[in-house]
Each structure stands twice: as structure tokens, then as C-alpha cells.
Image 1 (tube, one colour):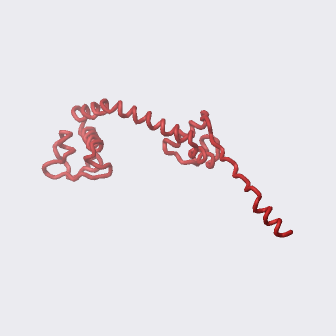
Image 2 (cartoon, helix red, strand yellow):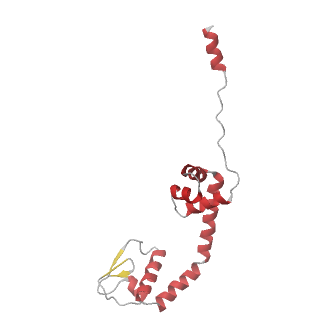
Image 3 (cartoon, rainbow, N blue to C red):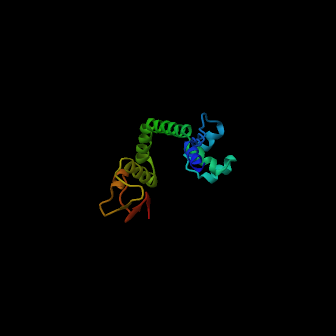
Length: 152
């Protein structure tokens, strides 16, 4: 009898795991959550703002439809930024030509960062001959050190 029970238990089909719930369509609340996620807000803050739990925020972020929405938003923003690059270059050039000393330094620093010639947190030491930033901005070297686009 004992042997028959063992055989019967072994032959029983395993209980199937329930299918995980998958979100099929985004509602306005979902889009609000995703917008806040895209802006870098934490799940606790998002939960409080949207009136949901932090766990629900985490669950949403893992959903395929939500990840696709975030990718689509990023592609849209990237396309807009690329389309504005000529205008941005014109603004930087105009500021370097017509701006005050501080604005010129900021514009020159930004131009160097965008072109990869200068890192964001990098300091620039100014020697007696001037720095690349000041040369680009058309400003004679007056201080010994320039850090992050502002004179000390």
C-alpha cells in the first residue's frame, strides 16, 4: 500500500505557477508615474504624489509596456535635442560674441564640454598666457584660476 502512494504522488502533475500579471495598456496614472520615473524621482516620492504604493511603482517599472513607453519618450526627447542643436550652437556663438565676461566663460565651457574637450567637473588652470576657455571667449586672463566656468 505504501508503495502505491509513492507512485501516485510521483505521477501527480505539478501545480502550475500562476501567470504573472502583465499590463496591456497604459492609463493616465501610469503615464504620470513613468514621467516621474523618467525625471529621476524615487519610488517613495512617486508613490506619495500618485497615491499608490512604492511596490506598485516598482511593478510598473518592470512591465514591458512601461519600459517601451519610457524608451519612446527618450527617443522623442533625443530627436528634439538633435533638431535644436543648430539653434543651441547659434546661442552659444552669440553669447560668446555679445555676452558679458561671465556669460562668455559659461558659453565657452559649455562648448568645450559638448565637444568633449573638457569634462564637467574638471578645473582649468589659467597660466599667464591664458586658457583655452578664455581664448575662445575672447577674455584676457585676469585671474589665476577658473573653476567650473566662474572666476575665483
